[in-house]
Image: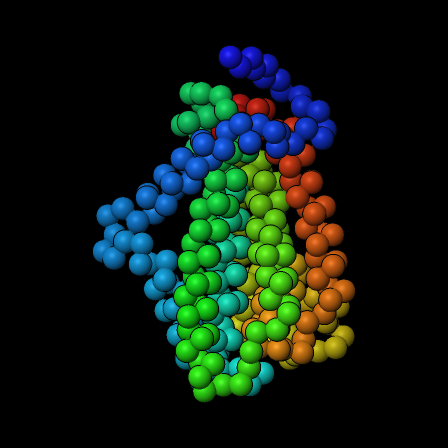
Length: 276
């Protein structure tokens, strides 16, 4: 039997991680619900997970490689853009799912109490499943290209789990903070979506980091998504642009953002319900 005491004021560093372990089944149910709801009444159903990044990559090849003629560091354009698009989609989905925690689930939160953190965690889990499927498709395409190209996987592939955790942690921490604000200010979602479109060009999704002027590289590498994408490209294509110090800085900054996001979320998760 569970005894709950709901308070408007929470301890500063009570993250509720233990509660998530007890509610792991609920997290899995939320994740399954989101996956099924995403592809109900669609023409090709779950195949959109595969088709969407491939179509986006083809568009990038036509616009950025064929028309704008932006360098891809001698990497086949399709292979160059695909991992960056997959990581950006993963970041964007995690951020959007987390920041809309209260807006999209108010009908549930107002009826029954359970750890609110289970909802954004399930959103990240759902996005992670899609991302892993897309990375598998990338691996298959990468293997096909290796027949005619001489690049190969190096030891940096061991950093792939860290890169994925950095991407998810960045989106999760930022989304937790934004979710409190969007619950009070409804039009903030529009502002965030506009800023998110602009932010994509601050990450090396459509261009290599080697074209960034030297005087701006310090700022460019402060973006946590930069070492995430460049680490993956370095692992698969031996790209020379990986900055190890920037990867370490990203680990520290994302860790701090996660702590801040959890603190803000836990201190306001009960109080914010009065404003929705």
